[in-house]
Length: 135
Image (tube, rainbow, N blue to C red; front, side):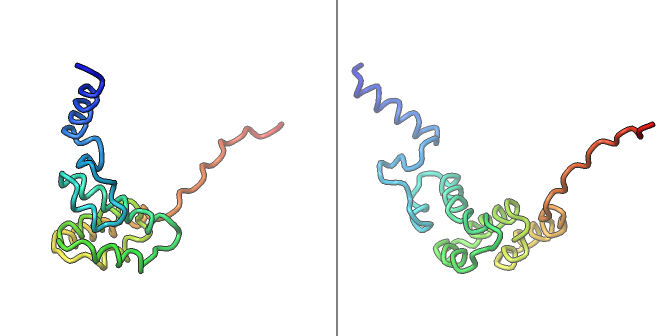
């Protein structure tokens, strides 16, 4: 087996294992609407999440960019899954994200996320250890 055959075999193995995005030979998706052409549901959902994650990663949520991205996801279940993953990753924006869910199951999960407000707060700095009083 020559180098070309070995290379194709390795690429096929990687694609079969789902380890390489865009195994169809096309370019990687550049917007959420293109995520649907990926080969597995897991790749599709991860692509959508990865594309929207920067929208919630800053101190302020970019609602316009979020809504524009969500418009490209036709399936309510898929759309809600992305919103829930974002709410868990960015709990300080969970209230805003959860207002956008459409399914009953996602609403219930959002109540669980929103019921844990401490997740959205900044972690306190540890207290220094006590020192012994000087004589």
